[in-house]
Length: 147
Image 1 (spheres, rainbow, N blue to C red):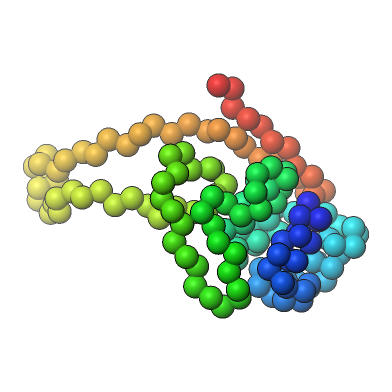
Image 2: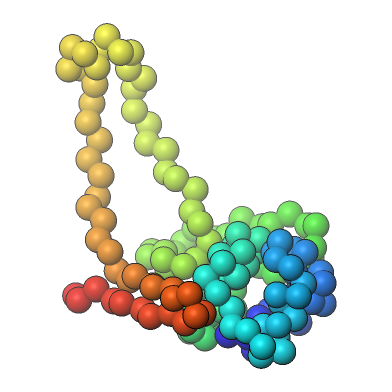
């Protein structure tokens, strides 16, 4: 994972200090990771994901897929992100966070709800696909649901 962090820094043209400032992690922590003195932790992954949501977490953690999620665009520091193409049929669990879909439903008052006039909106049932367990020694284990 340290090599993928190094590749990400190179791709974004950021040195250790700039990268650590961008992800809000101490530069000593990044230096220790890149020097092999410590391993990246869950907090490092989450900091990178929070600061750079276009980075594919699957790639960062496991080397699977592309560096940037589907439709993501590498951008210079300080520039605004571009909107990704919404033609994907199945979003990846680790791709950019998606904005919630707002369903057009009539506005109801408390009185209408009390009288039972509010419409119920069915939600699609969600299932757990994968659980990642992070241990305090910097290692992790992936548990995948049986199909």
